[in-house]
Amino acid sequence: MTHRILILGGTTEARQLAGKLDARADLSVTLSLAGRTENPVAQGVPIRSGGFGGADGLAVYLKENGTDLLIDATHPYAARISANASQAAHQAGVAMLALRRPGWEPVEGDRWTVVDSVADAVRALGATARHAFLALGRQEVAAFEAAPQHHYLIRSVDPVEPKLRVADAEYLLARGPFREADERVLLEHRGIDVVVSKNSGGEATYGKIAVARALGIEVVMVRRPTLPDVPSAETIEALAAMVDHVLEPEIERGV
Image 1: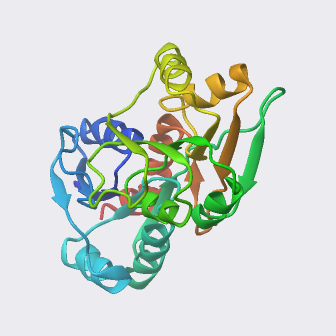
Image 2: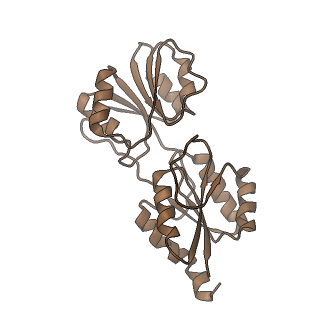
Image 3: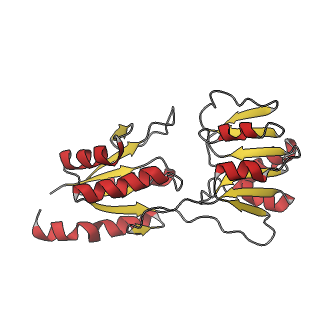
């Protein structure tokens, strides 16, 4: 029997996991994207785009589509989606796993100022004008209008609309991964003296953190939100290995 799996995606790992599981003849995989990125990378598996209507809507979808397993492979900061997923799986009586990418840890030479929110990051920049590199994504940068004295370099996958109502902001459209050598050129050429970042983890966007350390640049790091306590793995391989264990009772019963 074919088992249906819904992966909540939006990360490179989600796409890779979907491809790995979809290669199995006994699994039918659908990858769900929130639809926030205008031109997402080709995924290679069936895609569902857009929201579900909260936890209740997702629970209905899981039941109506006979989903056997829900996998949360969203961004580490997609706390609301993760919370809705956990609630929906419980309501629908569907097993759930999560792919949780490990966060970065400060090492010797790092100058991190760790804050709890983007609003706290704005305040952490201080009153004196600075050249700040905002590596946050377009949804969060509007908060920096509260500190218009700074010079901002903003990088995002899609255009920031509307533009920030500040005197000096430059916008870069780019999709990772970003090489460390390129990040060094960027930070030095723009005279960046502070980097504002989420603790996304992984190697694709770590270059700016390594360069900041090498150049003695402060990093204002937004701490990760608390996510639901569900069975999880840190790597694609480890999570893929958990799938059979979760589905094993059904497989043994021939369901």
